[in-house]
Length: 266
Image (cartoon, rainbow, N blue to C red; front, side, top):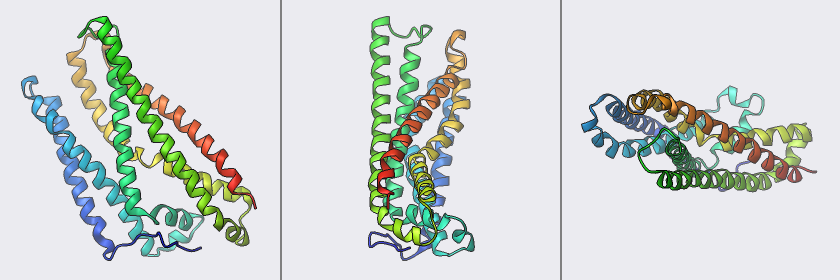
């Protein structure tokens, strides 16, 4: 196979280590903010809440710079494991624009986190046991938050899906070469589906790491503040959000896979 002129490179392939250090430091600061929110007295909560977004965004950006930089460096090391099965093709596809991919994944990870927070906030406000506002205000605010969540999810999946359709169309020029190497149309289609699945899911990785860490801690804090009827509400709402994501993912994956099949014909 070949690498196009659009392939990005760096002079020092060890730069990813600096991003890894920055990621661990910023993520540790974010963890400290979350722990402060959970364990500090309520009068002091405003301080970690006001600064938690800074290490959060920094850790997201540094995480993807670190991961994609590491994958690029690993590919350049020419490990024997890369040449087994279809790893070389997938690795080259992921790292050919690794600087741009890191930025895009960081942006969409942030978009994913915003959609999660909007969904949880909107559904919580609409709960009958949540009596902080009157009924009319609760309905308006909750519906607005859920609408924002839907907008973010549609933007997330639509743009990533469109990007995948474009990439599959561009990579279709390589299909004759792959057929000469012994790949059947079914094998090429499976390889394209792997590529689509990875690209749609990669921005979720850091978001899931953050959510899985924060939810148990914040859920315990909210159980102390909310009435008994809303016990473990954060866990339930996060589970519902996960179900929505699964539906969106399956639908968009099916659409992109079906649209990509016409570019795989000989």
